[in-house]
Length: 268
View 1 (spheres, rainbow, N blue to C red):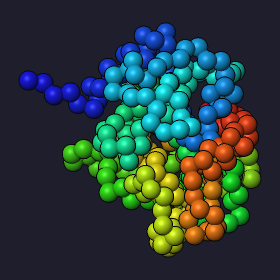
View 2: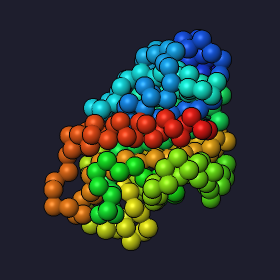
View 3: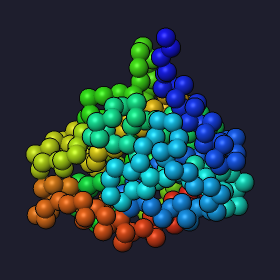
View 4: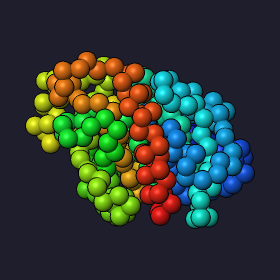
C-alpha cells in the first residue's frame, strides 16, 4: 500500500494545471485575498481559467469575496506567466494544514520561484485607514501549527524577501510595512487579543498567510506578502467587526491595490 505525500499531490496538481493552461511552467504565483480580486485582470491577459475542483487537492471557494478558480495570466511586457489563485483554503475551514498550503506547493511544482501572498486584515495602526496596503515584513504564527513535517529545520530569518519589499517600495515609496499576526479564526480577535498582538510586536491581524509563507520558504520560493487593511482591529475603533465591512473596503480599494500589485509584478 502506498501513501500519497504532499509533494506527490502537488506534482499531480501541477500536471493537471499544465494540461489545462497549455504551458509546462509558470513563473510567479499569486494568492488573492479579500480585496485583491481585480489584480488578475490588471497584470496581463488571462490565457486560461481552471476550476479548482478539476485539479487534485483543490476545493471550491468557501468564503464570500473569493472565486473558486485559478487563472494562467501572461504578465504584460515580461514574457512571464503568472498562476493566480482566486481563493485559498483557510486554516479555520478544518481541512488540515496540508490543504492550507497545497496551492503554494502546487505552484512550486508548476515552476513558480516567487509567490505573492495577499490578504485582507485588521490594522493596529490608527493611521492606516481602511483601504491601505501594507507590506508584510515578518509574521507571528499563532495557529500552533506548521506545514513542515519531520526533522526539516527551515530558516525563516528573511522569510518575506527583502529584495521584493525594496522593489515594491520603488513602485510606491509611500508603502508602510508591518508584522502580520495570524490567529486561528474564524471568529474575529477580541480587543484583549489585539492588545496582546501589539505587545508581541504585531501591526496587522488576520486568519491566513503565515502557513503558506512557511511552505513557500520550504519549497525555496521568494515571498512577497501584502496586506490590505480592511478595518481597524477590535478595540482600535468602537465599530463592531463584520465580514461585509471587509468586503466593502476591498471593493473600494480594488482598483488602487490591483494597479499597485500589477506594477510590482510587472517588475519582478
